[in-house]
Length: 330
Image (cartoon, rainbow, N blue to C red; front, side, top):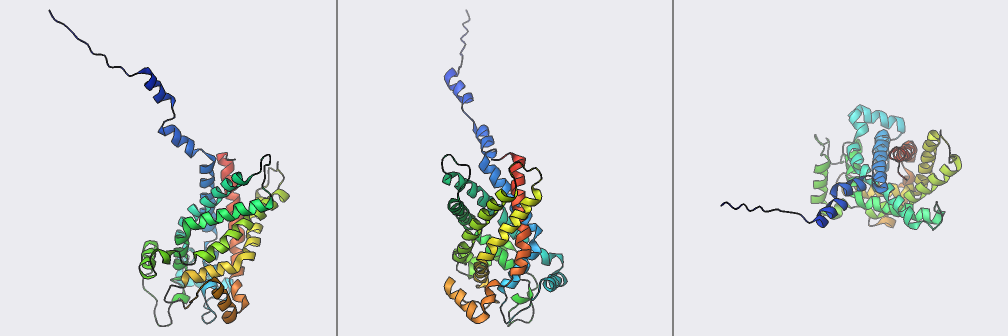
């Protein structure tokens, strides 16, 4: 007599149903990627990368004007400087430091726009759809602080890369420039090793924050006001007006805080042996520049800055709004 014993393995129906009913990792991932916050991050990153690449020659020229002192005016005018950059370095001269700038601008712009949208939601009064001026300025300022804190070392490296191959960065004690300029990683290592470690990578953070926070606050405030004034809610052909609003907003904000932007660049290059800038602090730097170089030194490079900021901010806001529309972000 043969006895057959069968064993039936079963999974409790309750656990099985709960496994399929609860959101899995895939569902959570899809939800995160399609959230408004992620859309704002993507839109901001795209906007930053596109805008900075478009104006890369003007960005580098502005930095060269800002960091050169009165005793070494190697670059004196917009067109002559552009010509000299092309003659000495070719196309690479126009794009010098742009790779680092794009790497910086993607997280910088992404975090700035995403943070602004989050602060807007947090500061919004019940029953209203728009922030009043004080709250909008606070939201913009805080988003500027967030973006600077996330990406400052890359901004420092970008500045160093922008000037290291320029004529003004050659030390007076050296008759020939270095044959090969270091790249992004080499520059980071050099700063870390020779300028105090992590502290060296954040040199100039305080004046940068002092400048960026009010700049971003004014930028968003001016853009929102101009957009409400110039672009009706149901306007179907407002692309040119969006570009204009962004350009004008950026120009207004930059004019107000420009001396702090010059100060930021001076601190960022003060650790280089070829740059003879020694400042004890923000106010000491402002006083020293005004006394030794004149008040106009605080606005050195303002013209090429306008040529950069106006199209850059126009493209930034337009690209951001366009990406939001494409992704149906709120």
